[in-house]
Image (cartoon, rainbow, N blue to C red; front, side, top):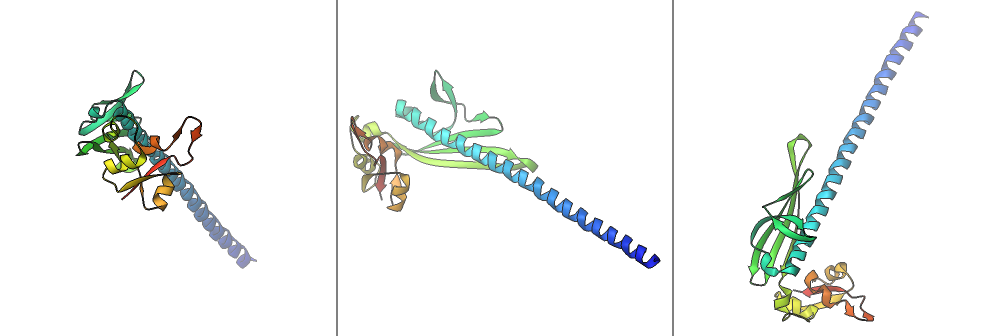
Length: 199
């Protein structure tokens, strides 16, 4: 009888140890996955801010191509319009910087970089890059076609396609500055509303 009680006590101790190991592993997995979800959420928010930076710069370009001066810029909304302000702007934990570099007289490379500090002092960063053209000069001020936009930017030709994925499938580059010439007019609307440039 004594042997049996001792054996049962050993079983209880071993079972308790196994149970504690399983609970600790499960708890660690939950904590790790929550951290991963937080990091993914931060990266998603940073990507949104970078895309917003590209679109804001496009709006500034549409108002005045001359406003796209080379250098590092932050963004601000003034009177319902986007404008450049300082060398960066801050939204919560995120710092956004718009870098502009001239490619030629009518094209600018725009890089929107969003950075933030993650737990344990690690730095997170997202960057989106686009090329913006002075389409009013390239098309003679008004009118124009997707092909003329593409050719003005140094591409061989341009074609209106259904969406940006269609550009990639055909080995072409989507140039959003030509999209306006693919939309059709009046009652005639085109489903091919994306300007794809052929290298």
